[in-house]
Image 1 (tube, rainbow, N blue to C red):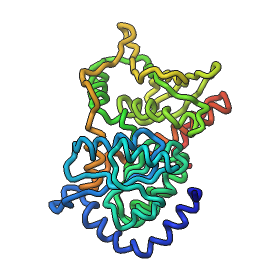
Image 2 (image 1 turned 120 degrees about the vertical axis):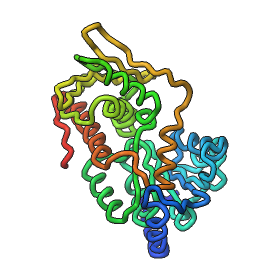
Image 3 (image 1 turned 90 degrees about the vertical axis):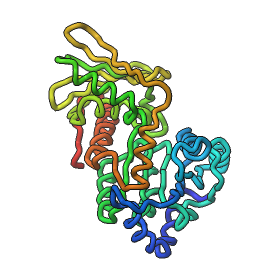
Image 4 (image 1 turned 135 degrees about the horizontal axis):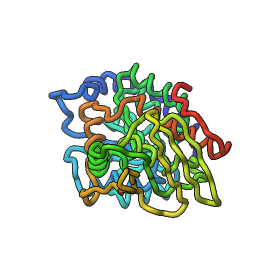
Length: 326
């Protein structure tokens, strides 16, 4: 099995033959509201160690929630990962190297557990004009993410990334609830996260809570501090408005929950929505069909900057500034 870097080197050799795809991608995907939608969207997935890859297969292939969109192939970090994802997600094609996708897909999903692998895997396809959804977290460093997004913009290739837990109907309901509360003193967020995870520490699962807070309250989180006790941790996040959020990062598996402290006491934010929300997947399909990006690029980078600050605070045990310009 070749390593990831060799995969990318092999893939780059196919770029000359993929140059024509750039113009095709621009014509078919770069403009929202286009009247000439492709009859079928062939989706390739790079990465199979996450359960999300199976979910994509089930939604697009097994349940056919979005007619015309199909996950046609998957590349896995190991043969077993690829086999399981293909079997459970009803994905018909397992590629031995990501470069096999070139010229045979209309859209790409990148889905590794560790975000440090995301941009390298996506780069050749975005450069070739293939609309790309990068599963959470988008990347591991703001500086790398900014360079990548500048390239995507220069190629006019639509790209987005988000936590599906932050784009659900449930989050929209909670945001509406918050707007109706006259005064909030404090925010409490809880959920599972292992700050020592081998898949990027606080990045792995911490991204869900960060993006949920950004979606419901405010994107402008300015400074953070993490405190630890054994395997569990908590973080204090300071918004530009002065609002404070306490984030519980539990190595156990508690569900993701949000609450606010008001003059009347602690109020849990709850949703009437039940079952899995298809809203995030609709946004992915809009990206592929219309070139519509669900999030501004600066918002994507700010989320990564917050996670970087949390990572630094885990190590320093001090307050850390959110550095969006690095």
